[in-house]
Length: 91
Length: 96
Image (cartoon, rainbow over all chains, first blue to last red; front, side, top):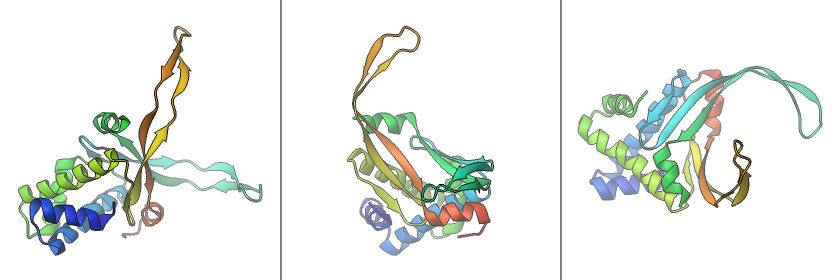
């Protein structure tokens, strides 16, 4: 499933035009992205939580060459599915 | 940020829809993703990330308290991988 399929779903279920559906989907994901960039987590009840985590610098290795290198400090996003989503997916 | 705050923000940016209509759309988006995952489908949102169902094999584990063997049945879990554009923007602070 891609964004185009989501547009189709919104069009069929809600009756927005495809152009409107596409615009709002873009805005939805963009708003979430901007929130992460600002360092804030997003919690969607019944779906899951996107957390922004700060990682410290650490020693690592280039797996190809085996060279030692420093992994720079960085921010990453982690996703945790809600218990509700986990249980419906387990099957 | 909770879903209701997210809906508020999206609604301010959309303009042509009421808050209620925006809420219905946002709920439908997450509901559709969820249904696709339950069907075992992968979801690809360019620039944002991928949601992918993964199968975990059944395994034998132990109850760490009692030492008893327990069977953990096969199950499906969800894996999220952040998209490249977003992963990079997280560390440059650029607006995407």
